[in-house]
Image 1 (cartoon, rainbow, N blue to C red):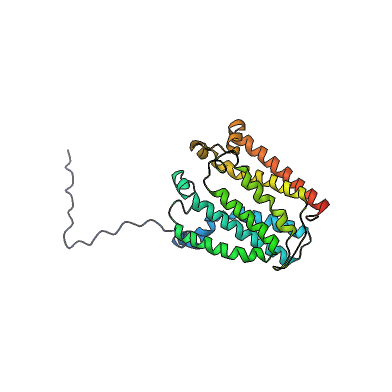
Image 2: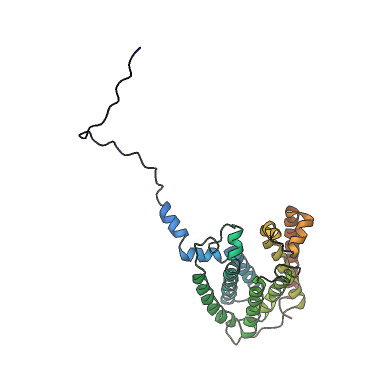
Length: 271
């Protein structure tokens, strides 16, 4: 039987063993992570950017179809965009504890990457920018839009009857219902005076707002149900199921938007 070869013990004069190869580092990855975690990017993510851009684009499109000049269309888009950003920041500030407990992704305030104090400062700056922008559409038009934002801010608060209860649709209906007034009274400069809106458009815009409420609530139904919320989309989801409720909501929204477009085209925004 052969003997095992003796183990080789490295002497003090032996050269050191070469280091183990390091894991390959993808070029640009640390810089990309630093960019994604920078304060400006996190503020954008906390502002509900998709909803802000869609709402601003939608109202700007209505203003353009109403034959408003290009500078007025741009002013409408900027005003609505800043207002929606203010609403988005406020929503994530109010909900940061719930979002953290529910481990909702894409919430930098909830996961600690974005400081609440920084966001409150940005929110105050947004409000200070929003007021003159809104008034530059005309005092009455600006008042209508600021009122819609104020209603949205109140709707963000954790209220048992409104946000968590059966009247959850009300702030959305009121807020969207003020959009036609904002557009019909709007113009360029604080002295601008438009005309009263078509009453039927106020009602149709309110119906669109209710549909948007259902659409945005769909993604949190399970977590809200676990917390005992009883708002209208949740009650509808229990009866229909999430998939069927999504289909019904999309059909309802398409019908409401189409009705608004047809009536606005036939009658115009103003009386």
